[in-house]
Image (tube, rainbow, N blue to C red; front, side, top):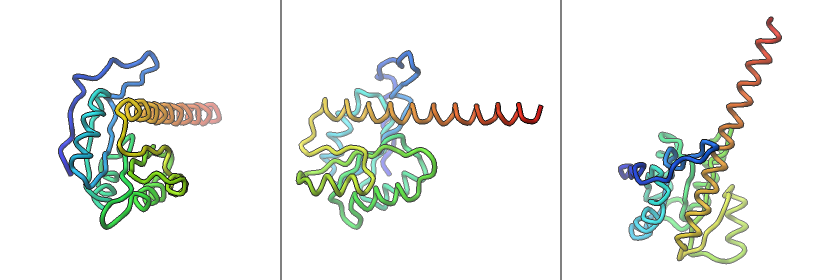
Length: 167
């Protein structure tokens, strides 16, 4: 596992809704170091904490240990494909889904369909456009934040109902 990229100081201010990408974590999974460096440079403007993995097995270990808010996942990797990693993430999750964006050189419709079947939330084709990556990552992070807010609200309502029922 590569050390986290602590770029929170350069992040934009939190929105009025409380969404702050600098308070979130992104796991970048790619076996090609130049690709990883490029993605990290693009993501730097979000100010999010970033973690990296070089293969699927390492990605799953980091995912379990760190519970990232977003996974950027290359498809073509040794030992375990991005499709397999995504399927394992989906199988192991309970509750809210962690957004997964597949990033790959594959560009056939069948590849996109396979990514969706594996549980991906979005799909980007290499070479990745910086603005497109940042916008899509920020959108998925916002969805993750809102899902967590919804889950917390549901829990609070459940607790209130239980309290009212016991009174």
